[in-house]
Length: 207
Image (cartoon, rainbow, N blue to C red):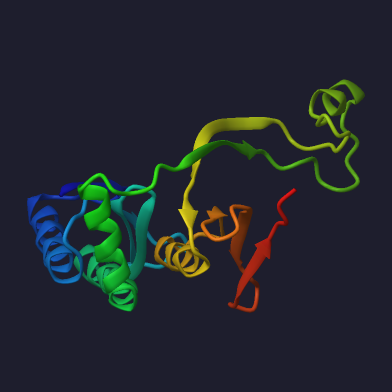
């Protein structure tokens, strides 16, 4: 497994990198057979608390299968341990299905995913502010709906999944929403995390 360790205003010396590699190696060996790569980032606490560190772990366990963990601690080592435990907890919940997916990917049996354009749109002007007419016209969509300028565009994979597989991936990656093609109906579906913590599911009808 290829592991990248980076720091934002945090020194990542050899001792910390060894601690990260050893910790992720134990998790990978215990909870799934194959892992492709992991990116571990350390940073100072965003709230400016003295001596507080944050750690983000983003682990790729297979094609379109990601696991995320976050941790906080008085030092970088402790922050990593908390984040690693979050990763391990999520993998424990889905161990069998993660292993099956990883083996299928390694053996070339995973279903090919579709791709769709994915855009990052900047926020619109604050309410009450008058944007210049030419700027508003430039950011109007084809349907007439205004939005901020597109600042990034990249392809996104749309995997063919069951509903339970989609919920698993949403939970593992800790993302807000996940589109997928329903392997039963063939329709594009969406699972998302509601404000109350429950999982929502939008099942679009086929035409």
